[in-house]
Image 1 (tube, rainbow, N blue to C red):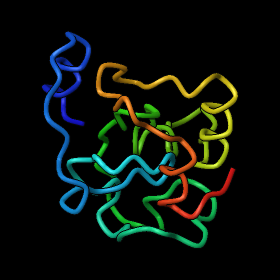
Image 2: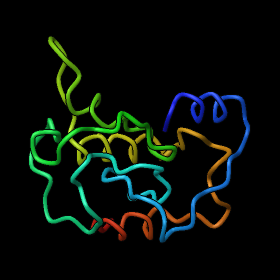
Image 3: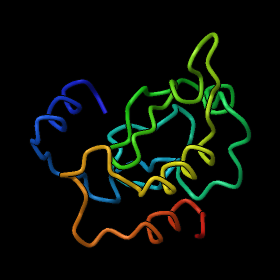
Image 4: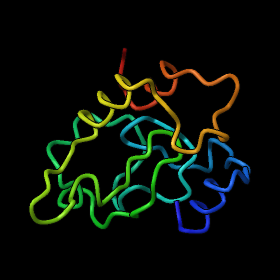
Length: 126
């Protein structure tokens, strides 16, 4: 999510979701509405295993976008810099689910949204 999208999201302006076939999936939560790939060479889901962060070592440059659903910032959460611990997609997702799956941009949550279906998109069963 670029800066303008974050401002719109925080201001409550609801941009249209890209069509599912045109979108990129969040590797953390499966949200199909990323404007850009999370990492340059990530490819489409499902993925077998991402390994351990930082993911740029495996997938190339991060987009530094933030998932509108789970709030994972690609390139920061997994590679936060000196003195900070990176967090894997799996650990972030586990924490996000435990805290109630609150959407980063709550006004973008579809009324028919299903966490189970969204996670299936990336090969995760709950």
